[in-house]
Length: 113
Image 1 (cartoon, rainbow, N blue to C red):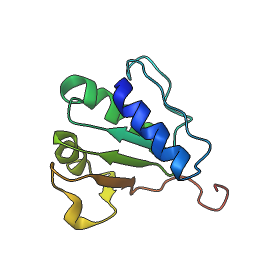
Image 2: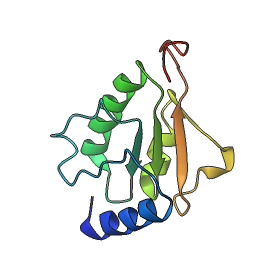
Image 3: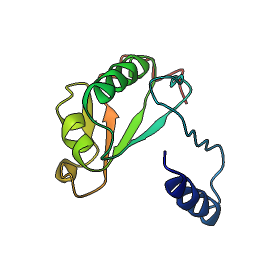
């Protein structure tokens, strides 16, 4: 994540009085993702790296509810995934922010919060 985005995000987080948020500035292929519940993917995130991360997120989504927020071309790639559903159908536009949730819900919703 670019430093500018982290700075803006932290300002918004503070203004909204949000807690339990971690920003990681690292190569997404090298970090564990299983502790996350919400993920953000933006325009520079494409190609082989995106495919690998989508595979990792699908595995995580088999065990718990996750949301993936996107902007740019990543939105189009996420919309192609059968295991994801947009929270609003009119969100599939690379020039607008989009939010997807995992649709398979193979996890036990009674024991998850």
